[in-house]
Length: 145
Image 1 (cartoon, one colour):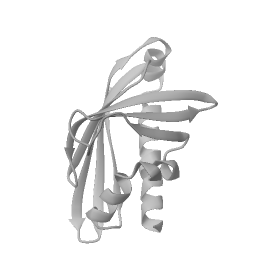
Image 2: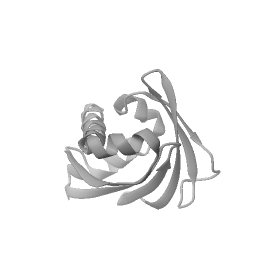
Image 3: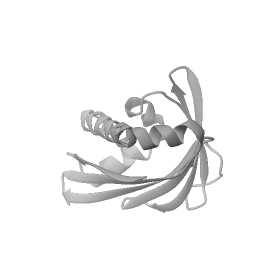
């Protein structure tokens, strides 16, 4: 399953990247966010890994993030692994003009197991709506900073 979400943020790209790239900010725009832990040493680069934990309706959900492309302020692409599904998310940041940035997220769910296969087949829009919701919440958070 593949889809794209986009949001225009009324801030310079440098400010958007600074806000996006700070894991401490994730709690402000990602519902259920609990923690982010770097599993690799040093600055982020392709091959770096992190553990991201969410509270999903009272159940812990753990994702392992593996960076594939780390070319900020232009692009950050990562694979997110979960026991029930894996996806690749390409985040592109385009400067529209000095005070506006377009964030485009290209998502590809390439592995689903068990119940998630059924959910994805019956309700594919649910996945896109969740990503768009978080992107819209990021916009609100970043613009209020």
